Length: 171
Image 1 (cartoon, rainbow, N blue to C red):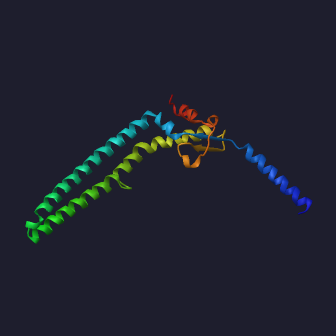
Image 2: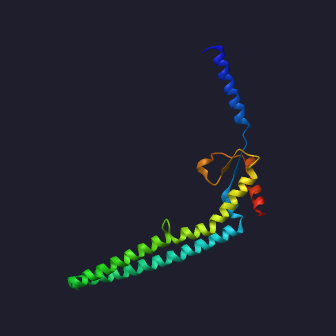
Image 3: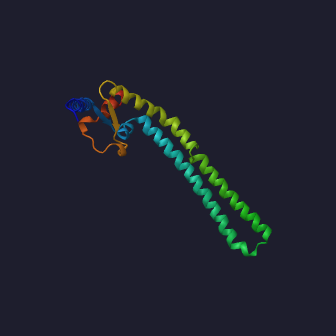
């Protein structure tokens, strides 16, 4: 390598090192922030109550199916084929109905998912806007400590969670 090329490589490496050290980083703990927002804890309680209510309904339906199936198994030997098929179809239909109910309530596009979007999404949008506002001119990157897979170590001096809470008007 010529001296000119070596000098250029060295200058490039030096300028890269200077630029990278000039970047400012911070992190927030979104779980901590959300736990301090009353609207979020209320919304989460509503979702938990709704989920619990629907889960009880599912459990009751499965218990009903189990009772019917047990009764059928006990009588099965004495029943004619036509009645056996009718009872089996009835039990299969009940199982299908409870699975559909679960999908309707807990599925990917189910009622719980839609309710979560309705209640939680606006709060999260405010949170991300506040993070952006607090960080805009001061930091190049902001990480979320709540997502442990992206953050291996964090110096507490870099935590701006309380600034974000202040921006949201939460003490």
